Amino acid sequence: MFFSVFSCISCKKEVSIQSFDTFWNQFDIIGNYEVIGNDSVLICDLSKVKQSHILPVELIAKDIEILLLDQDNEDALIATSLAIPYLSENYIAVTDGSHSPLKLFDKEGTFLRHIGGIGQGPGEYTIIGKIQLDEDNNRIYILPVASNQILVYDFDGNLYSSIPLCEFVLYGNSFKVDSQKEEILITKPVSP
Image (cartoon, rainbow, N blue to C red):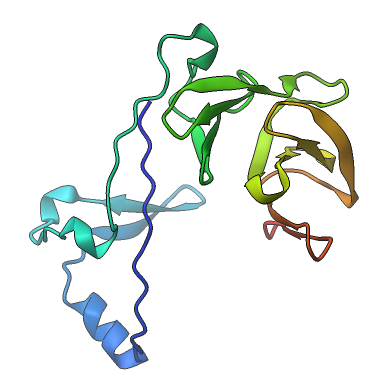
C-alpha cells in the first residue's frame, strides 16, 4: 500500500483577481468540453501538454518519511488500494472501506489491533465515512456511512457509548469532535 501525506508551508501572499487570471493564462489549453448525448464531457488531449516544471519538495513538505506498514501479521494486510490513512502523533489508522475493520498501527508501522468490526451490531459499522484520532482524550471517533451516531473507542479498542446525532447522515460527511467545548461539527455535502 502506498499513501502520502503532505504538510504545506503556509505563506501570506495576497493574490489579486488580475494576477490570478494572468497566472492561468500562461498555460496551454489541453481540454475542451464536448456534448455527448445529453452530457457535457471534458476531453483532455495530453499530447498538447508542452510545459512542465519540477517543483522542489521543500515547497510542499518539510520532510518525507517512507514507512512500511506491518507485513508479518495477516490481520494487518489491507485488501484494497482504496485505503485511507488517518494520522496522529503516535498512531496510524487505516480504513479500506467495508472490507475489514479499522486497522490501528503505531507510528513505526507495527499493527496493534482492529478497532470495531464489520456488521450491524453494537460497535459495528458497514462502511467508515470519516475517523478522528484524539490522543489527548484517548478516543477514536468513527462516523459510519448511513448512520445517526458517532462510534467511540479508545486506542485499546474498547467501545464506549456512541454519540447520537440530531439527524441521519449518509455519506461524504466530515466531522470534528471538540471534547473541551463538548461540541461536534459535522459538514454535509451539498446535494438535492
